[in-house]
Length: 102
Image (tube, rainbow, N blue to C red; front, side):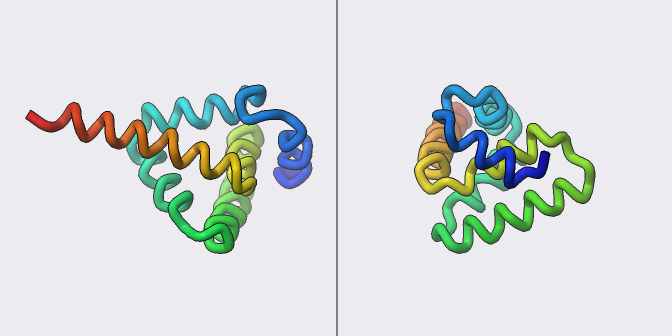
């Protein structure tokens, strides 16, 4: 199943019901590199965010990334989901910054 088809299927679920998306959010909580990359993408205007995400989905698909991971990234094409993911990532970055302060 193509990432776009999986995205269509996933949009019928809430983000909290989709295990793959929940796993992606957990990965962003644990992996600073992925968190920073997604944070950079999610901060963009909707047009630019969607363009970057579509490019990322295609690149990951070409590289043979797991289809569930690619689908979770594609889930961020939805404006509401992207907004919530950005909020979660911002919260994690703020907490990480507070832990680094003496």
